[in-house]
Length: 177
Image (cartoon, rainbow, N blue to C red):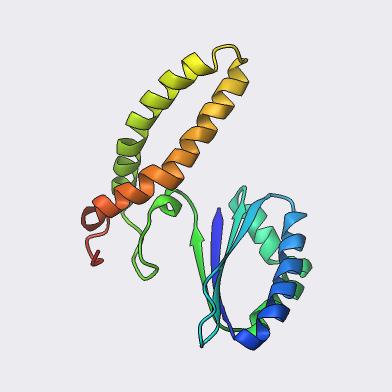
């Protein structure tokens, strides 16, 4: 389960925000079920700097436990006080692969499933063929671990962003692409 939080911070508050955010991320890192946290910083503009904080948890319960924890509440209160605006989005499944404007409604599940299959089928055909040869000396668990890691990276960074741009009007007809 992934949460994306967007914060706009005034230039004069950036150093204090970064410090508080660092403490919040450190607290999250030690929390059960947390997989990763990424911070994407926008350019410093006259109105401030926009931050996108991406938390990924193993499951919904781990996320909910983190959200109600005293560690998160304490750290988040400082971070939120330094931000002039805040948005929050939950990505619970495959929609995290789809590159859509933030105001867009999520695509229908049957379209997400079909488009995901269209991307996975050729990728898994090529990747499994190459890995069968290149990784033949490794134990099955290592081979499948490497193959699945390459597959997930290819889907996340190459296939799905490009494919959703290519068929954007079909995947989300109500959004102008």
